[in-house]
Image (cartoon, rainbow, N blue to C red; front, side):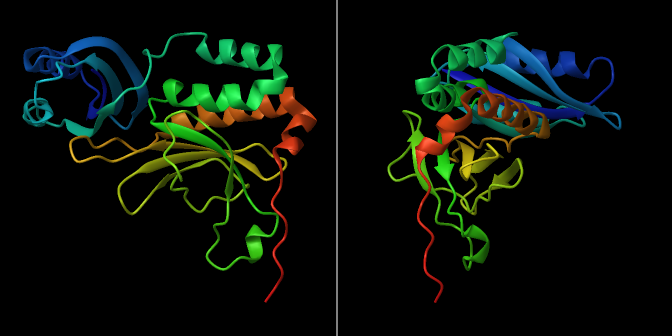
Length: 233
């Protein structure tokens, strides 16, 4: 299976090589490395690896933990192929070519781009600010791996951000800026794999895609539907 392994490591010569060797010795075949961050002498790297299905991930974690200064931030199953240059532009081209299905195209494609499990276009009620405890979002469109019903976080249509649920699942949310629509992307925690939270660069990427699609789709987003305003108690 295809795994994503996120590692925080010292940004110094030789450390990246040690991590790569450890992955190889553990049985992982590296197919891609993406640098998410370099700051203050530390780096955050995402490794996409082909992992033998019968092998235990614990062996990999023990090997990486033995490298001085290295921390494993998450290991989870990657959906789709590794990220390649031009995927975002290709997605936007598909949305522009068929705007009638543009929202569905975006929602279905995003989990593969961000190594997530599922995504939904959620419609936040117009009276969200007055609701006690928030919540109340409904699903406008869901990707094919979305559970029924999906466990949505308490989202607002204000800004893009990362969120973590009490059960350990992670979300990235980005508003379209109209019709109360918010794109919600999820990485689910499991008994065997623990995903990393969405990095700020991933949230920024999601926000850019959503903003671009909002410009392309325009008034079509209003047709997704807005829940009625609930009466005040």
